[in-house]
Image 1 (cartoon, rainbow, N blue to C red):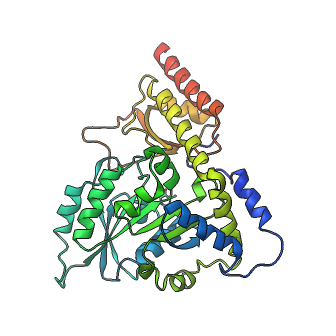
Image 2: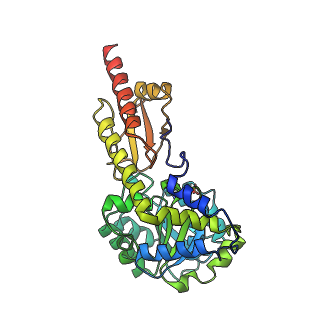
Image 3: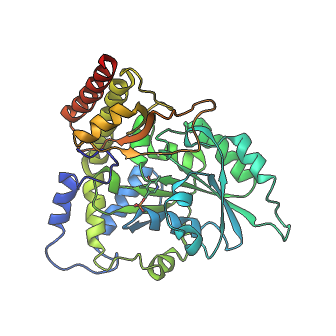
Length: 359
Ligand SMILES: *Cc1c(COP(=O)(O)O)cnc(C)c1O
């Protein structure tokens, strides 16, 4: 059982079916096909807005190219210090922006506050030649700690960003999980809350390799097609990306998948949270559970073939200390997670603490 991430599973059936349906016959290449056109139309419907949408096979590509559209090479992009764009993309944002600076902001639970953003902005002064020029803000939703920004928090952050003339980006690798958890619409979580550009993830929630960069303002998307091509991210058999997005969005499948993953996560969080000695540093708000567990529990899970990801974080709440006999683990649920698997994880953890207590 592998709960280390939500990209350890394959595709969900309706996405695979769409891919198979798109496999026969001939279609124009490089995204000029009917599947991609349908995907673009569906994305416009989902966001209740005209969009310029660009399908891309990886989240790193989507983020890096989206940021490149928002900043000049001498610009600064403000984001959480543990954001995916800083920690997990091998310098792709720096490369595709031709060297813009990613400025990390500290904050508990994977989120930064308006106060922290404002304090950081004071150090980057527009027009001062020694300073990189404030250009963009990027927030992750779901965050890297599995938490969520409320709509109010997004609006407040983008309000400050706009006042400083920053473009705003939302890294939505887990967009559906966040939207479903907040019980809001895609429009409310993005353009209605001041977001200019979205990396809309589908891969982790059911696709094989498909994300979309979404612009709400056509002017910002000008030249994006060249950016995507010169970075090697324009897929020649583009219909196979289009088909994944169609299968993902059709009949609300993406929402069903996210609801299921989130529900599994909530069950796991309450089950694990009730095991003596297990501590959760943050609430589980979407499909990721972060748990500090006694060493014996971590060992028992591993011995049972249950995989979680060993974690580390700079954004633990103040005063939250991980002891020498403890392990910090991340569990991620997905559309494919089964209730019986969650029960087993909790049972193994419980049994391990009971054993330890008896020794
Ligand atoms: C998974 C993830 C991505 C995309 O990663 P790729 O592996 O490049 O597809 C982007 N942002 C966040 C927060 C993620 O968790």
